[in-house]
Amino acid sequence: MPLPARLRLTLLMTLAVYPLVTLYLYILTPLTEGWSIWQRSLILVPMMTTSIVLVVMPFINKRFSAFIAGRRPAAA
Image (tube, rainbow, N blue to C red; front, side, top):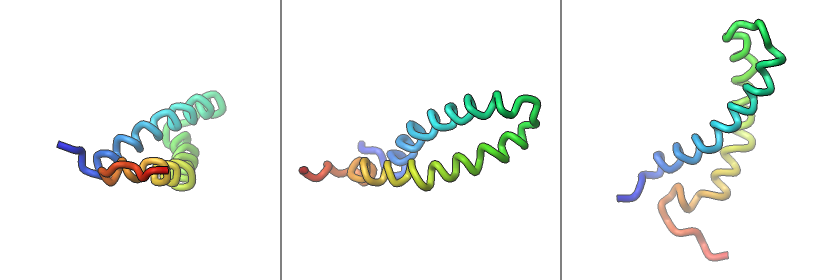
């Protein structure tokens, strides 16, 4: 039974966003030592949102649209 489109998109988003969050945390943690979690989140969330909307989603939609839709990719 094939995965529904939302599950395929969720899988791809998870594979793309997890390393990005990890990278941003490695960058931000030393710069925000001693800050409260809400203050770190105040910096992290706009960075993540911008990255997802402007980079991750267009990349996934362009490269994996056939996979998300559940059809074979068009011949090149």
